[in-house]
Image 1: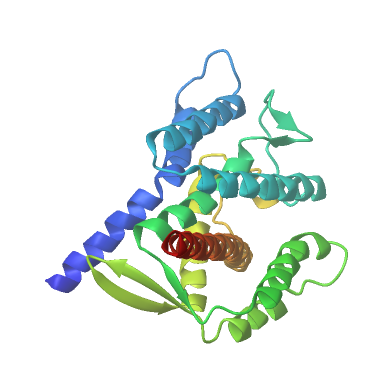
Image 2: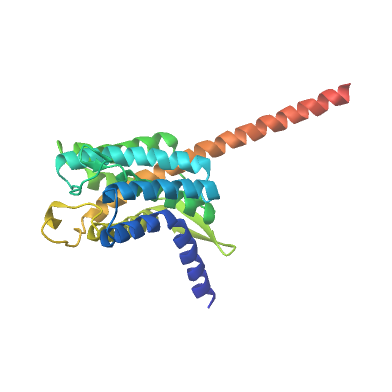
Amino acid sequence: MRAIKQLCRFGWEQALSCLFPVVIFASLALTQIIPLPLLPRYDWLLLICLLMQWGMVKSGLETRDELKVITLFHIIGLCLELFKVHMGSWSYPDEGYSKLFGVPLYSGFMYASVASYLCQAWRRLDVKLIQWPPFLVVVPLAAAIYLNFFTHHYWIDIRWWLSGLVIVVFWKTWVEYVIGGTRYHMPLALSFFLIGFFIWIAENIATFFGAWEYPNQRDAWSLVHLGKVSSWLLLVIVSFLIVATLKRVKGQGEKANGANLNTSGRRHLSQEGTQ
């Protein structure tokens, strides 16, 4: 019974962390079914995402620091979308005033929602990383994974080499998280795969509701190829590495500030004692 309760608690915390993605999926479904006045569908989706983002920050569900991370992911995702649509990997066939070179601006929020989930889950589950690799290894690896999304159109696709490198680099790295006061551990590589797989499921839902369209879905919707799991897996890794690196940098900065305050306090007491 305790295991079932813990699983339910874990599922509840995950559901709360997925609030932004859930709103996006609900908006995709509703705007597909309900006739929309005044503006095209893509523009309504952009307005909904902007209002959702404002509401989460205003209500305290997201902090201003998390908003900065999410904005960074919006930019990263939008750059990837512009390139992929230009290369014909997928398309956004509907009209919209907020489209830039064939890409609706709301699409960046789909990447931002992944960052929102990671930030929310990190805070709610009190995530800690055990045996995290050095900064000089993590950053080039994340950069190589992201660049491969672009370069494989002109050069060889090295995603499987990068996936193998991820396993080697993070072989000893574990994720520690808390559920109901109990700490659990999971290999980081396994968490990457699980998140990537569930995003692939979400991608099937999104394409079903017309969020975007792959070439093989132009005549009728069909299941997204299972091979896309590897793409989402690598994108999740990039997302996780950026969030983890930023949190570690912030944590080190807070420790340094705390040490400086303690030193200043000791000096102040020492001076008072001398006087």
